[in-house]
Image 1 (cartoon, rainbow, N blue to C red):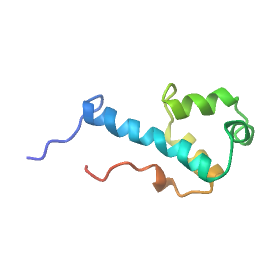
Image 2 (cartoon, helix red, strand yellow):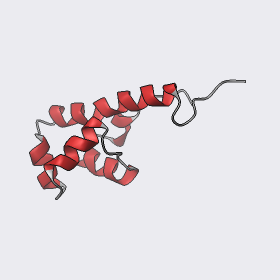
Image 3 (cartoon, rainbow, N blue to C red):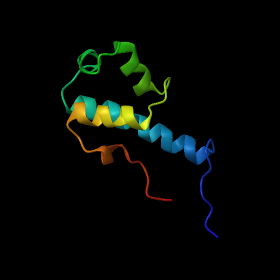
Image 4 (cartoon, helix red, strand yellow):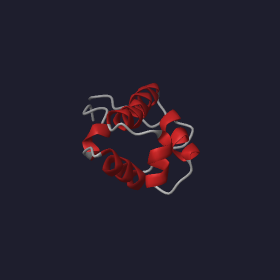
Length: 83
């Protein structure tokens, strides 16, 4: 039987930390500042900062908005195919 990572396991935490790098990297590749992204999303700059730092969890719908703003496919946020 293949062991699968459970939510809040060390594997989950490791993958979430890898995920957190994706939005920031995509934003920078798009040549955008947090302020510019926040204006496009009609949210405060702190919203973008907290999403990038992991202080605030990003839900799937928000992730789709980030991908659209960055001009990237949603798949850039995928961190693992191990499941």
